[in-house]
Length: 157
Image (cartoon, rainbow, N blue to C red; front, side, top):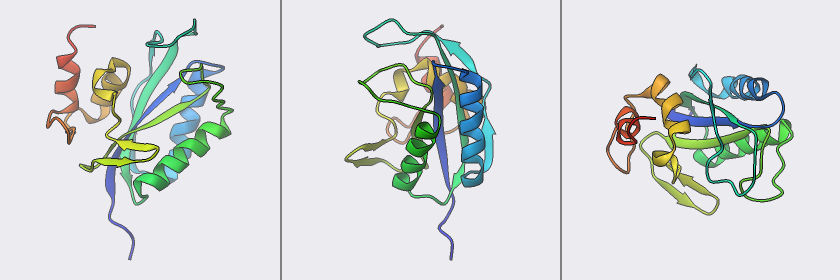
């Protein structure tokens, strides 16, 4: 018997190379693993909280339902990043592709190397704006607020 489907939200980002192609690749790569996949439009944003000068990011989000466990989904995201040449010379380095597991249903997961909901997504307009476009009514299990409410809480851009 297959595992039950769980709604998941994944943030997409890129600031090296053909950013749009990297994000589109990620959505296509996730497609076979996400039923009812919805992809946001892409937005360009300036890098936030990085220690060096970097090119602007292109950001988006995908949502869908999966049978994968949180850890298996994270492994898929990391493998997809590697397929697009992601290197990690240091934290916050520029990247060809960055995929973050934002929400996994209403579950709260805190394991080594895996925290869901993503611990900093509530303060990141570049995550919340695309996510609100495709799943604004989804609720953060920690705060009980919808994605749209979290975005409004950040104030005007």
